[in-house]
Image (cartoon, rainbow over all chains, first blue to last red; front, side, top):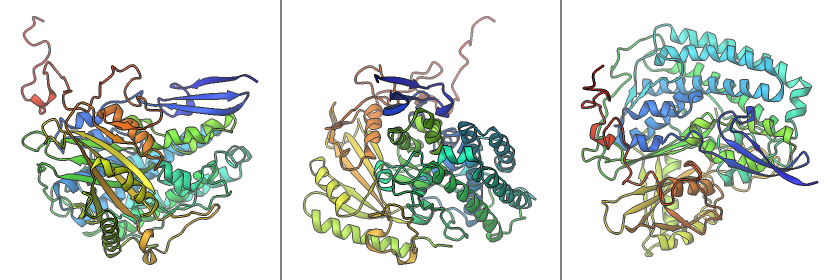
Length: 379
Length: 217
């Protein structure tokens, strides 16, 4: 049969954003693919060069609206490396809690978008319902629903409000029960299993070589998590273990393994949040004033010429990295160069190639299982 | 709780990497130091400054002998006011992940306290200074780490560093029909904004005026 190219996207439910997947098909079988990115390139790196270090945080929030808190934290750690800031222990605990709540919300957004890809619309409504709980909690910290601008160089903007800890505990415990409900619905659904199992194999070595990271490689049995390998914040003090899935086939991880590993990650996030609230210095029901030394240490605002800062951070989709060079304008108030490494920018071209050999109908399942986010990809 | 890499494991591994690199490349102009981050847990990493002519030899050795299996980031920087021998700089960030020879159908769960040698995760930062000029060129490492492929595409697209030998180089973030030689992160391009030629003139917006100022309404 004659082969032909089909263009999926930029407007296609499979893309979860704006990008184009060009697929070469032979009948129903995919024989070649090409990814085209850059539809929403905003030039964040260039804009950052004209902003001082504090002003950059809101731009980093907007790299990915689904996981704004983790992206802002990622930038903050790089800026702290550059400016040599000290962070109080309580602020590190609050950052951990906020990042893990964001991870829960982000994975729920992923699951909610993945369900309709597979043909399970109920899942979307359930996930949106539960994500709202965590967005409410994050709103209490940052003041808005999506873009929080919450972490600061040297601490956090404000302390946890009174009663926040109790609400976190109640909602997290409720959500742990809800996770069991999800699994009851999904793991016994024939449609779910048929569409995910044995589809989209990606093996560990090729993924590491290609630069894929985060839950996608942990699904293939690779135990690499920045949170234990290069621990930042207080991940070495709270109780958790990395979610690693044993792949079901010698060919690597399939879509089902990637779904399993994210469910397990959500459990671990709940566990971390609950443990961090028990161990937080200063107590969970205390509210320190803005700028108190328990939650904020004033950091230098100017970076010396030639200094560099780097952070390696476990974002919800993999390792996000910032590399900053200081000494931008003559006063050193702006960075000279900010470079952002988005995990999905590397992953999407890799995923496009893993689709070769599968049917067109498998493309949404494969793409969705890798959790693409185009905001951070195009920057 | 599985535990995390301790600062002792981390600095021992960094010193071991530095020792191995100095043994192999000492005296060739490749400068290796162990640096510490000043954020979070102040962990150590290995910083290498390498002249471009030695880069491929160093890269192959890092990948196949030092076990550096993950290329995470490539950054190009333009220094139009820098010294003649450092008008551009390419910074590579690598990770060594503890997954040497992952067997199919297995799941690695590490006993973190027992990790040693090549298994200890480590960060590497490689700086390659390039001389002033219109065509900064560095050899590609696309065939050593597949992960550097799209990073190099992006670096060429945004900064204009040429990667010699790179297969299938094309625009990724800028439009396909961008003018040849247009690379927006080069420093001669400024952000224009609100009647100011440069955003840098008025980053805080204190002297910014509304566009319709003075017009009869």
